[in-house]
Structures are given as C-alpha cells and as structure tokens.
Amino acid sequence: MSDLIKEPASVLIFGASGDLTARKLMPALFQLSRDDFLPPKCPIIGVARRTKSDQQFRDEMREAVDEFSRTDHITDDEWKAFASRLYYVETDITEQQDYDDLKARVREIEQQADIEPNRVVYMATSPNLFLPAIENMASEGMIPGRDDENWLRVVFEKPFGTDLESAKDLTYQLSGKLSEDQIYRIDHYLGKETVQNILLFRCGNAIFEPLLNRNHVDHIQITMAEDQGMERGRGALYDSSGALRDVMQNHVLQLLCLIAMEPPALFRANDIRDEKLKVLQALRPATDNIDEWACRGQYGAGSHNGEPTLPFREEDRVDPDSNTETFVAMKVNVDNWRWAGVPFYLRTGKRLPQRVTEIAVQFKHPPLNLFTTVECEGDMCQMVEAQPNTLIFRIQPKESISLRVCTKRPGMQYQIHPVMMDFEYDESFDFDLPEAYERLLLDVLRGDSTLFTRSDELEAAWQFVTPVLKHWQKSGEAPPLYEGGTWGLAAAMDLMKNDGRAWRVPSPPR
Ligand SMILES: NC(=O)c1ccc[n+]([C@@H]2O[C@H](COP(=O)([O-])OP(=O)(O)OC[C@H]3O[C@@H](n4cnc5c(N)ncnc54)[C@H](OP(=O)(O)O)[C@@H]3O)[C@@H](O)[C@H]2O)c1
Picture 1: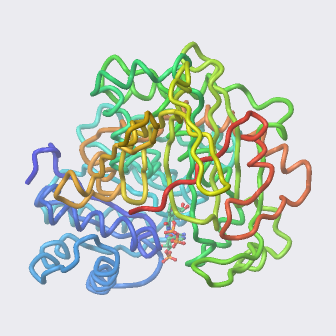
Picture 2: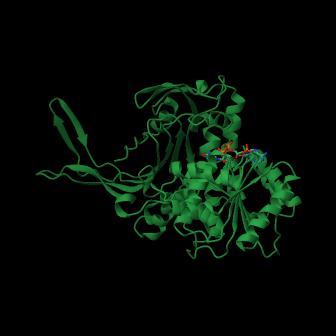
Picture 3: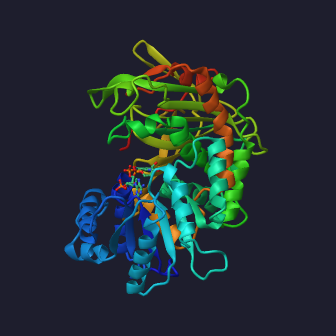
C-alpha cells in the first residue's frame, strides 16, 4: 500500500446508482485500488434508493468500470480484489428512519474490516439532497465533533448553490452541522494534471514567473470549449443552470486564479486558497455596463463532424422556449498591482468547433520591429514581423505546455518565423495521466484540501458572477443564437476586436 493514506477509512457514496458514480467515481476508486493507493481495508459503500443486493451492485459496477476505466483490460483477479470492497445499502437520503439501518450496516462492514469509523461521504446526488442528508446524519449521530477520535469528510459535488445568496445559505446551514475542515467542495478541474502543473510551472522555474505581470503580458485568454451538445440526457440539468453557472463560475474562474495568483509563502492548502481568494476579490465588480464586457449566446442548428445538429431548444429534455445561455464570453479585470491594465478574456460554451481547454498568456510585442520583411507569392504580399510570444497551457485534450517564440527562418535573409516549443505529457512521461477524480479522491482520503474550494472562495466567485446572472435574467430576452459547430457570436468577437485583439483559434490536437 502507498503510504499516502495514513488511516484506513470507508467511503460512502450517496447516489451510488447515478451517472457520476458509474462514469467517474467507481473507475477512479478501482484505479486507486489497482495501483495500491487504497488501504487494503477500505470498504466502499454505495447508498441509493433502488433495491439491490451487494452482488448486484458489484455486477453493475463491473460493467461501469469495464466501460469507463482507463485500464484497458481488467483481469478477474484485479476485479475480485476491488469487488470485495463493495457493498450496497438501500437508503432514502431524505428519510430519517432509514439512517438507523444505514448506520448499523456501515458499522458492521467497518467492524468486519476491522477499521475505525473514519469516513468519507461523497454526495453524488442532486444538490437539493445535500442538506437533508447532512441533517439526517447529524440526527443519527453520524457526524463526529472536533474532540472525537474519528473523522468525517464530506465531498460536495457542484453546483454548490445557484447564486450568491443560495451558496451563502447552503454554507450557513451546513455550518451548523459540519465544520469547514469537514467540507470538501469539489471542482474536478483542479484534479487535472495540467491544472496542477500551472502552479508548479510558475513557481518551480525561475524564468517565467518574473514575466507574468502587467509589464510583460499583453492579455490572457482562457477558453473552455466543448464540441458536444446535450448528449447523455444532460439537457434538463444544463437547462436549469447554463454556461455561466455550470462552467464560468467555477472551472474558468479557478483557472484564472491559478494563473493570476501570487505564489504562496508555503505550499499548504490554506496558503494557496488565501492567494486564490485575493484574486477573486480583486476582480473588478460586475456593477455597470455589463453588456459592454460580458455576452452570452445559445446554439442554434449547426453541424458536428459533418452531421447536422439540433438547436439547443430542440435538444432532449430542454424547454423549447429556453433562454438558457450555452455560451458566455467576458473581459474581466484583475485590479491588483500585478495585473492592473491586463485584460483577461474568458469564454466557454457548448457546440463549439472543438473540445479544448487552454490558458494562453500573450506577451507584449518586442519593443522594436527589427526584422520586418515583405513576402510575396505571385500577386499576394504580406508583411512578416515578430509575433508576440505566447505561453499556452493546454489542459485538455492532449495535455501540453507550449511557448511560441520567433526564430530566424533558414536562408540568406533575416526573415522571422514563429515556432512552437512544446512539452507534451505523453511524450515526456511514459505513463497514463491519472484521472482528476483519482487524485481528488485520494486527497480526501488523506485529508488534503488544497484542491478543493473553500467557502470564502466560493462566495467570492458567486459575488462576481451573480450580478451578470441577474442582469440577463432581468432582461428576459432570449440569448442571441450562434451556429452550432462555430466559434460564433459576433458580440464575443467584438469584445476582442474593440481592443485591437483577436481570440486564438486553438490548434487541433496532434
Ligand atoms: N454526471 C456527471 O458527469 C457529473 C459531473 C459533475 C457534477 N455532477 C454532479 O453530481 C451529482 C450527481 O449527478 P449524477 O449525474 O450522477 O445524477 P444522477 O445520475 O441523477 O444520480 C443521482 C443519484 O442520486 C440517487 N438519489 C436520488 N434521490 C435519492 C434519495 N432521495 N435517496 C437516495 N438516493 C437518491 C439516485 O439513485 P436512486 O434513484 O436509486 O435513489 C442516483 O443514484 C449532481 O450534483 C451533479 O450536478 C455530475
């Protein structure tokens, strides 16, 4: 067993028959078990309403792990070792009387495994069940206090609130039952290897950090694009949330924090989170003229891989009159000493031309264009001059870090040519990158909350986003349409064009 986890614990998954459990949690737990990161005795207990035996649960999880695991071929021995950890307890999370049985059964399983009641509870359910679950656990005495020897860590899936008020309210209500150090608000983006590498790259190399400020950086672009629409029945959930709440408020703002924050004095959870919080607090508040720096859109009909695609309003389980935005772009300012005057352009959306997440730091032009030439081919002539350096963190797919630099094109003249210096994970390291959920589950088991969002961070993010949300809700207008499969939306292009800049077209993965 790896020594990363000091104490054995059990993992309870509330919502164990759902999509997240099947696609992400079980494959991640299987991988951790297979790679020897889990203690030998670490029962995994599924909790949901549907009636099923332990064996049925194991069989269903085998199918899920076979389908979604990053391990290509799972041997029977590997599966047996993992399956022996799995149990299922039928429970209605909202019914207090079910917790008697749940508590007794969980304790029985732990005693069989000869472990203390140290527990991770993973809330893989809809957010309206978060509070009832915690209240019922508290009434049943399943929440240890500060002085207890045993511990409980509760992982909350997103969304944690739907605006500033509801997020504050949920935090307040939970705070009566759980202390902040028992709460792990997950943002799975932070579990991705490249995301963690942003900090390491910045603070583990002496050459880049001195350049990341207003003196050298022209602007930063963060793109989180998906080519998919509402596959796998996501329509209903997405229609009730939209791109601003689903992605911008959490994933995109977290990426912004990691690239913009000051290096912490120590690499400790709270030091890092303090620095991220300062970035969120420095965001220029969304008070006036929202339409000048934020825009939204909804995809209309379009195409994907040459096949026609439906408009959002015609997708499965989407309201045909929906005004939900499927695209958001913003120009935001981080009003602090380091970044004053450097715009951050953020965009996220569905049904865009490709699935890509990247942060691109565009540096300023060289102060003098020494090497300008005019190149002609037939009647066509173009001016060739130095292009600004760009540092690109590609978070998905094909994780990489690249730097665009200018070089001399071989030949008798001084002609300038941009080239990319690339670091690609799969070429430099000879092993599969762990899935984000593997890293995050391991962190919860070892009590490391660095990659989880603290309540003040969460509130600061909502504080920034909520006025935009309210502004759009108040307008009552339908978002402008963009053609599915395009980068679309003139307003988003104008955000850049008005500043004499342009969005990058991310290169397709090689
Ligand atoms: N799916 C994803 O990829 C994904 C990604 C990011 C975040 N999330 C978040 O993760 C959470 C779960 O998403 P999901 O897609 O897995 O949802 P889901 O497929 O609808 O699953 C919900 C689970 O909750 C259980 N459940 C519902 N009511 C219950 C009750 N009263 N008592 C006990 N169990 C109950 C359901 O099982 P029974 O019907 O058997 O009770 C089911 O196992 C949501 O907050 C979602 O926003 C999901």
